[in-house]
Image 1 (cartoon, rainbow, N blue to C red):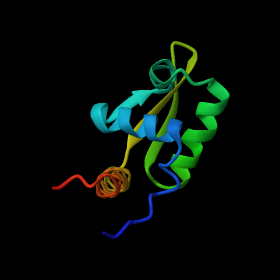
Image 2: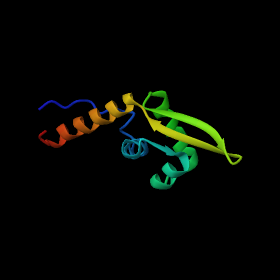
Image 3: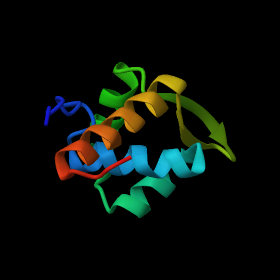
Amino acid sequence: MEFKDLDPILHSQLRLAVMSLLISVKEAEFTFIKEKTNATAGNLSVQINKLKEAGYIEVAKQFKDNYPQTTCKITPVGVKAFEDYVNNLQSYLGVKK
C-alpha cells in the first residue's frame, strides 16, 4: 500500500474544519465560520489567510450596515485539494473506493 502525503495546509484541525464547512455551503460569513468552529477571531483570521494564500478560498471584505463583513468562498482549487486530502486519508485507513 502506498501512503500519499497529506496536504500540510489541510492537515490543521481548524483549516480542515473551515474547508469542510465551505465544501458543504460553498461560501460563508466569517462570523458563521467562527461560531461553527469555536475558534477565536484572531486564530481564524490567520488560518483563513493561509487558505487564501494557498488559493483554496477567496475572501471578500465589504461593509453591511456600517459593519465590516468578511465572506469566504471555496475555489475549484480548494475543492480539488479537499477531495485529494479525503482520498489520501481514506487510503491510509484502507477504505476501498
